[in-house]
Image (cartoon, rainbow, N blue to C red; front, side, top):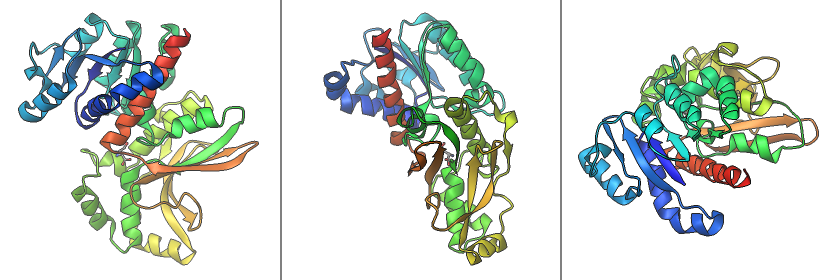
Length: 335
Ligand code: HSE
């Protein structure tokens, strides 16, 4: 399988490490021989149709700061590479932009139109245009997968889509943003919102633009992805009513505790799509601490199930990308 990698930050580098360490068993278990044939980062690119040496690429990125320093590296941009390099899969790991979706949106569209399967961890294009991207992928007979956009490595999308096959999911609700869950957990321990935010920043949890976490954008984007993929809704960010945790006060936290409740930033598909701080009984399975994510699905026949796990992290998200790659391989071999 020839792969073009767009983005070589934390997730991209962990994906390369994962391919190196799983090389033998990917072949033994799935008959897969993934080969990275082009990589683009923010400073340049490298193309090698005979496959890039990943260990060498990781060393070069670490010491020289860009993949362009690999032999024959250059400055070709992502769209040019997508259109000119032969590959079965484009892995798009660009930064999330919830206003325009760019540059991920154009890269994903170019790859699909060129007949290439796409894996992305980029929430921007999906939150803004998932229904049309799915339609475009179907029309072009390629597969679009985005497991790492929700739950990091925790297979929240697959759990709903595969494990609950045959049942009818009536609704789901849960914690989709690890950073705000960390802040609320710290506030439960007695910190103010500002103190907890400083602590979360110190630990490197908060997005470069903190608004994305704190004001609910990240959770809303994930809710949109889940609603489309799991509930077959055709929705985008504009369909979500969302509020973040900026105005949750120490008094709100104390008043909830008095009732044996905890305040969580809950994303819900019940009746309408909402993200808002909500009091949850302390003994509810959704009351997970720290940066964990948790989602409860309510199904017609099998009742309630809750899936809990780490919702972020480089290697965790890279494991979701590999999961998507294996699935694409399976789809390709059925075609
Ligand atoms: N900022 C996100 C979170 C990262 O805190 O959950 C993972 O999408």
